[in-house]
Amino acid sequence: MKNFSWLNVAFKGMLIFLVLTVLIGDIPADTLGRLSLYNHVVPGRPRLPFGETPRRSYNLSLYNLEAMFASHEITAEPINKEEYRVILLGDSSVWGTLLKPEDTLAGKLNARHLTICGKPARFYNLGYPTISLTKDVLILQRALKENPDLGVWVTSLEAFPADKQYASPLAANNRALVQTILGGDPTAVESTSFLDTTLVGRRREFADWARLQLYGIPWAATGIDQDYPANYPQADIDLDADETFHNLKPGDDLSAALAWDVLEKGMKLAADNNLPMVLVNEPILVSNGANSDIRYNFYYPRWAYDAYRAGLSGRAEDAGWTLLDAWDSVPMDQFTNSAIHLTPVGEDILAGKLADVLSPLKCN
Image 1 (cartoon, rainbow, N blue to C red):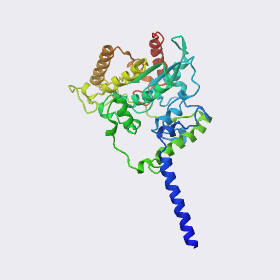
Image 2 (cartoon, rainbow, N blue to C red; image 1 turned 180 degrees about the horizontal axis):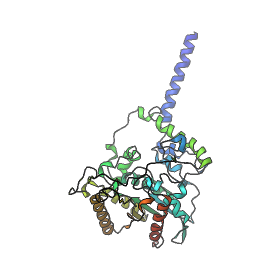
Image 3 (spheres, helix red, strand yellow; image 1 turned 90 degrees about the horizontal axis):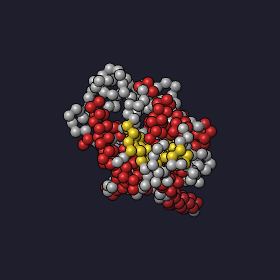
Image 4 (tube, rainbow, N blue to C red; image 1 turned 180 degrees about the vertical axis):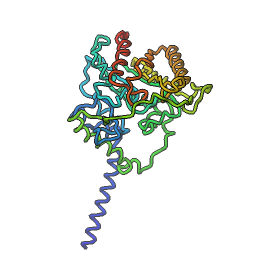
């Protein structure tokens, strides 16, 4: 009788566990993401969560867009209707690798106390490490819910190759949403199994969400949101005598290998939502070291980058886009560990160039 009673309890307990596993696992990702300590118990972060060393950075990378935005200061309520809200999109150079929040492009622009359309401008850093136009459009689509008044899209040639649009894990883990945004077929994305919709199958997603909430406490106490190494390798100045770019060589059709359609769809997405957009070709390191006659830097052979700039300028002119080509505006000694990461001084130079474009913008 005792064995029967024990087995009965064990069976019921297992049944309850399985039901809860299915029910909890059935919580939509958007609903889970909107549950957040940020902007309530702790302040919103000044940049989207990203981190590879959580214990030192009090930050981590995850792929739930709602959770990422819920942790950001742009979603704080109530919205200040007296401010002119500007979102900054881009890669790690905008996010601010090796930079404190006040030294990023957003921080430097906010320090200038600009007025746009008669309102004090507030710049929100929505840059995200990894370089991909598709990743930027994904973030733009979500950012539109926050009622921005203006967008600034900072990009570079490395974001354009068609073969690397899903190289960003954020885009790769949101393929169905990306396909919907870009006009593709979301049903073409690999379907999920029943197990994938349970708590067991989604344990990484739930664990990342929980860790993001917990790291909000030490982040709020310290202001640290990335690992700041005491030393880091400087950006390469002496370069290889290599003229290739993503397996392309001089004489190949560079334009055909670039995702111009993604850029155009991103600009159209903004226009369709009445969001003015300023496109910025971000500063790059222009080397004067070995083989600098062949390559500008580690990323770009001269022939490819020059062709890209010409193509970007032509498309911007034809479409009527506002383009700031800031490619050579920052001196070589104001880059840190890569050919696109700037020092605080470099960010301030770019902020000045951008401020000159933004201040005279016409208002609707």
